[in-house]
Image (tube, rainbow, N blue to C red; front, side):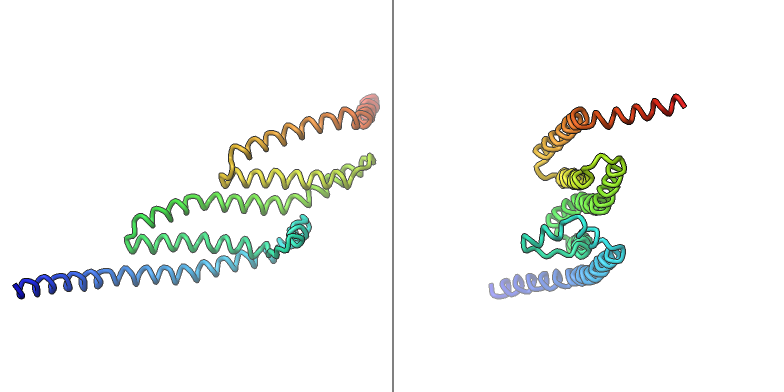
Length: 225
């Protein structure tokens, strides 16, 4: 009887030690992937942030009025560092998924895989944000210069409207890309487009008819010449 218990205990210990010894190489490989992946992720994140700072991305962000708005809310954000941080954590999750697969944790690996498949939406959302930051200020100033060149006034008003129109469309596009309140966002998007069309039509019909008449008269004179 004692011998049987001893044999059972010995076999159990041998299985345990064998399992640990078989698991150690996988654990070492997973740790190696995590450590190397962490340094790579941090390095690439810092590189992206530095590149954005060199192309004066922060200054574009400040011109868009976001820094002032966030300061009023007592939030301090480094735009370049924020984008770099997103890139860093995206890569960290990718390396973590690889490490989990090495360890054989299938359910956790599937969860991380679903996260990774969703991450391109975050990248696209960040890209939309960056493009909006870049073009909002320049396009708004271009429209202001064009309106003031027509000598009809309201240049500053047009600049503000164009800038905020770009930001509103960008925010809605980001929400749609991330899948946040999709139905509500689509409804808002359609409503804003309809409102812009109606407002533009009314503005042209009520306030822009004189400008339109001048354009047509000028075109008529040129055709006669």
